[in-house]
Picture 1 (cartoon, rainbow, N blue to C red):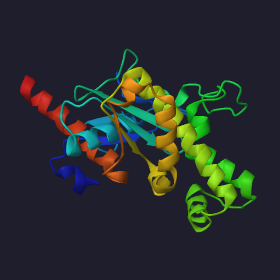
Picture 2: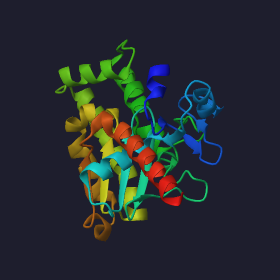
Picture 3: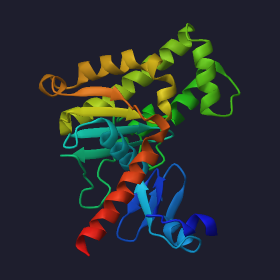
Picture 4: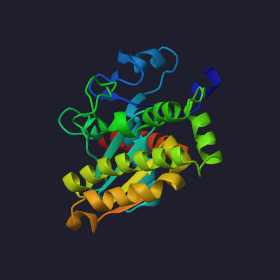
Length: 258
């Protein structure tokens, strides 16, 4: 640890799948982890005497993707699909945080009001509850009776049995649900670009056709004609690149005001 700190570190970034209190620099609530009021920055400051930055995972990934691949002033939404669904909103090339600092919680829009599936947030019928990896995992076990222990095992078996009608039905359902949520984003924000990232990329080739079909059916034509839907080019590195850029930007801001 001493050797690391001896270098001229600009800071340490921590990406979390949940709500971040920027004023207090802490993780406010991560429903999929069951964490509340976690003092991550305080813990790290006891070990490293450098600035600590806590950032929402989708925000960081969105910044990484935008900075290294797209126009600096673009209006885009980064959608991270893992155990849950997080969204990073970038307007005119800048992160949009909203009044609470946590704008973009589209994972908790209701896409099926009559659903009995309870989301980790406590509501029923959330997009996250019906389109995330948790949903894929649970649906796979229900349809196949498999005794797999994690989502990557499910992905492996899905790829090995892709012609199975049960698997095809599952993928079509998941793709339709993902597309429905994306259509809501397109209809409400009309971004130029949506980038899909997260661990879901491992099966994107099997979901893409149903996702695109669902978006086209549900999005308003005028908005649909103005948006591109792509997949992350940075993959699992998007968050790392984004955190690095956020830390660099904050340091440059401090230097410019000195």
